[in-house]
Structure formats: structure tokens, C-alpha cells
Image 1 (tube, rainbow, N blue to C red):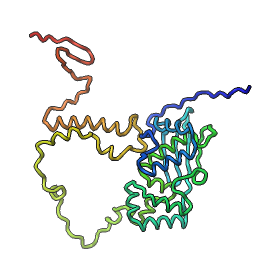
Image 2 (image 1 turned 120 degrees about the horizontal axis):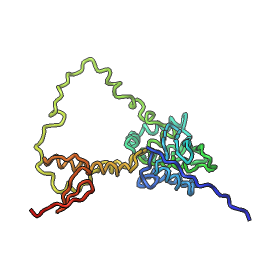
Image 3 (image 1 turned 90 degrees about the horizontal axis):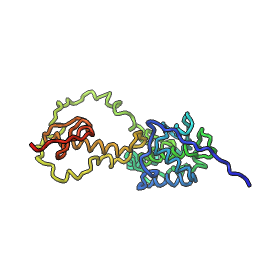
Image 4 (image 1 turned 45 degrees about the vertical axis):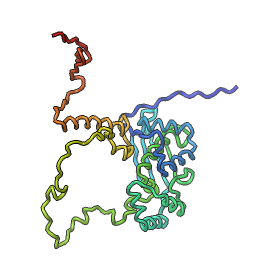
Length: 310
């Protein structure tokens, strides 16, 4: 009877300040390009390595991640002292095919506008498919990956973590997909991509004299302050903007980005109400405050009895 080969259990070393994934899934499944990226990973047949890669991404084992046109490089901390280098090379569209795709997009300014505001029109995928370079990769033909770890499988769990973080970034900004295929933001905008300062550096010879800047001219005439904001304001979330913007890619904090800012906003809102009502603002730490509850005096976690018979 053959004996099964035993492997030594190895635990990845913790990384301080690593990049942490913000979502339990690969991306926001409400947008179609995020669902397509999930299908890409499923077609790679990663099996249990996808789960281990997700754990690496969520726990911040990726210490650096660089995205360039057609190339992604990352440093992933495993069980060895030195982090592993994982890189992914995408097949970029070139030559006449690239020029045709750019021309098709420039003829449709609304498509470029949607890309610039982080929306991906589904017609863009058809443009790439017609040129023989699918927008979403198929590993056998459209990309090659490599990792310096000793794992024989490709993609390994380290590469799976990179795919996971890359999917989160693409969900937030689908223009990254085009850049990985060799078409940059500057290619889409052309001359419009030049810095605004270049045109402003040479003003016309007969420029009209500008009126002096005034606060009323910029903001308008000040209105009378509201006497009360009403009862509905208390029910509003203290951090509506961060929920509207969604998770922040490549976040390096210990807690999730939204949880961190919501806590800070809640504290700031409480102090803001105190200042607005004219009450004195107590800036002492919690362990420095004295709180009296009934006949008990609490001071730095020590309880003292208070004589209330007088």
C-alpha cells in the first residue's frame, strides 16, 4: 500500500500595511464587467487556490501592486522571509487594430465620457472582439502569468490574490481593462489629454480685463442661516458619500475603508453638533473623564462611593 505524501503546514508571515481587499466577493456584482471578471477567474479553474488567494487579499498579504499598460506586477508575502514576485502579462492590441478601436471610440464621445466616469459600455467589448483581442482575458491565449513561489500550479494562490485585487480595481475603474490591452486614457482623449495649463500659458493679446474677485460674486448673496435643520437630519447616515463612492481599491488600513471613515464621521458629527449648539467641547480622552452615575463615581475604571445623605 502506497503512503500518501505529507506536506509540512506553512503559515504566511503577517504584513504590516499590506493592500487589503474591501469586498467579500471579487467585485461589485451589480455591474456587468465585474460579473464577467468573476467568470474569467472561474474559467481558470483555480479550485481551492481561489479561496486561499481571497484570504491573502483580504488579510493584506500583497505588499505592493503595480499596474502598467499590458503588465501587472505584485509582491506577495508567503511563508518565506522574502515576498514572492507575481506578474501577469496581457496581450495588447497593436498597430492598425489599435488605431481602428481608438477611431471607433472617438466617433462616439458618449462612450468615452462613460469610461471617464468609471462606466463601461458593453459595445466596447465588441470592438475588441472584432479585432481578435478579447477585452476580458482567456488565460490560454490572452495572458501569461508567473510567480517565484515553489508551487507548481499556475495560477497559484499568490497570483489568485493578485487577480482578486485586480478585479476590485477594474470594478471601480473599468478603464484599467483598456489600459491592460494597450489603450490608455491619453489615446482616447488625444489632444484633449494635454494639460490645461499649456493652453492657459499663452493668453490672447487683447484679453478683457477681469473683474476683481468677490465672495458674493463666486458664492452668490449669502442667505439667512436656518434656525433648525429639522428632525430628519438625525436619521441620515454620517458617511453617505463613501457609500456612494464604494470601496477604495488598494486600501492599506487594518479595517475596511468604509468602516473606518464611518466611525470618524460619526465622531466628527457629534462634536459638530456640540459646537453648533454653543456647548463647550470636551477634548479629553475617555480614560481621563469622570462620569457620575447615581451614587457611584467612576474614575479610570475604579469605583468610589459618594455620600449623598447631605
